Image 1 (spheres, helix red, strand yellow):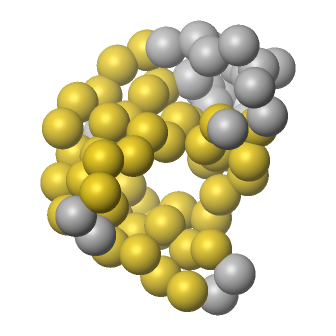
Image 2: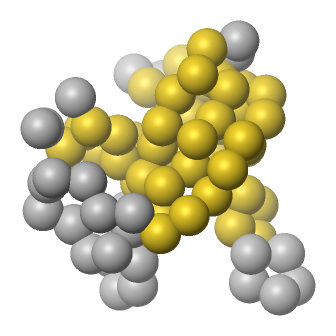
Length: 78
């Protein structure tokens, strides 16, 4: 699997919860319609105990990940 870095616009609530709102690829924003689930998950790529977000992005099911602290980088895998 190949790790693909992503730019994500996110919302942080007062309890520290993070919700991804949009994914930005090559300067184009894609709206996340819905987050279907969020859970700790380790794909077969180098990462730091990421959270897995199963999402609907502009009508398509996609999975994105967010590394745990200290990295906190967003990515997808291919």
